[in-house]
Length: 92
Image 1 (cartoon, rainbow, N blue to C red):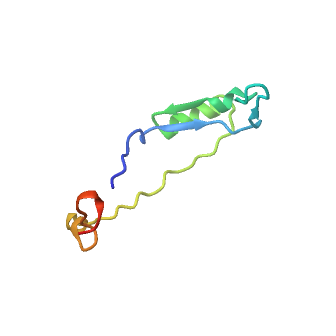
Image 2 (spheres, rainbow, N blue to C red):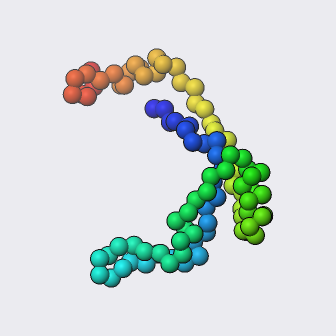
Image 3 (cartoon, rainbow, N blue to C red):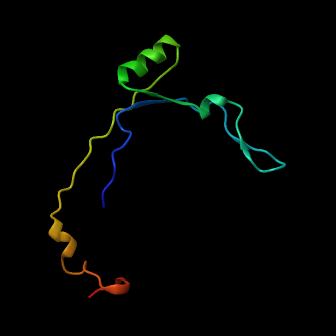
C-alpha cells in the first residue's frame, strides 16, 4: 500500500479551541461561539507562520514534522506463500 505525500509542504496555523462546541436543541446541529476554531491558515514556510503569529500577538507552538520511516519491501513479497489469491479472493 502506498501513502501519498500531497500538500505536506505548507505550514498550517490552527487556533486552539477556547470554547467547546454545543448541540443546538431544536435541530441537533453542532454549533460554536468562537469562529476562530473554524479557521486554519496555510503558510509556505515555518518562518512566515511564526512571523505572522508574532506580528498579530498570537500565542503559538511549533510541532516539527515526524521523520518518515520508509520500509523497503521487494516486489516479490507480494507473491509469497499465502499472499496469492484466486478468483473470489480465496487462497490458492
